[in-house]
Image (tube, rainbow, N blue to C red; front, side, top):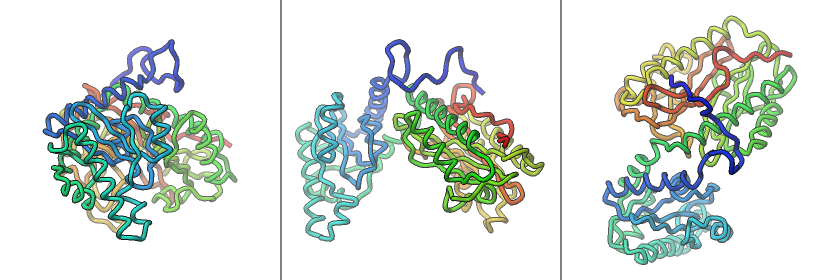
Length: 422
């Protein structure tokens, strides 16, 4: 495990002039440079991006999710950028985002708007207008006759662009963006370190609020309040207790009242700081944990750290994944499962960045037969679980791959279950 240097670690979330924190100009510039380098290697002269995380990666714009293709971005190999967005967003971006000089009004040719129109002629108008706008911009920047990548496999849009003579290459664009995004810059890593610290503020609030008689949703509401207080985007997560902790409750957080001897499990996933998403689990016990609960936690933690000890640059995911439990350790008989692909999300590691799931994925359902190589600078979450009588524990760490192993970005105590006194 990598040890941090003196004074290396989380800074504050506000902008100051007396300390180097996340450098947002450098964050945007280095992401853009990575993608342009990969574009050159792929012989693409432009890319049309419709995926929110890809758009944010290239533009720095805070994507809202939208209603489907009401924002999209054209990037040329020379670094020119054209961004299309809804009227209000585009107007605000022209004022607030001086690093973008060509912002236009979007025509949502795919997604919810044409779907809701109820009219084939309306859908045809929208897709043709969208394709016209993209093609006109390509012509203005001199790339209309050159290969263009696109990160969405929509056949109507591809066909409309093809009718205008555009050489569309979806697979090449996906490879470019995957390659650019899988290894993180220093500022991307610091964003993930910061969001881990924010999650820890949420865990502290859970420890303070948890006691018999409080409901899951009351405690979770207090935790979310704490996350917002620190400036986080809260796009997911939940808290469960007692028998809702294993297997994971389908309704997520409920109105169940906490009882003595319960386990409480908190999942901070999709908590964002400058767009970078968390996935961070911890387990709490209401009072002294039982022997079964302590043993289950020890098993889950040992499995987790076995995997972490295997992660380093050059290691392959088929080697690393052997640290996760086999089918017996997965308790496959409980689920009536006989293959690992049937047990998605139970024991795995997944990349973290502007999306919850990025490269790499380390999972017995895939990695033994389809391995990839780990690279320095990859960031990921590694998660395990284990049943304890009628309840269960879960534990997860957020890490970055360094030259000699992993640096653990998460810092909430992990040696044993966090005990809540009442």
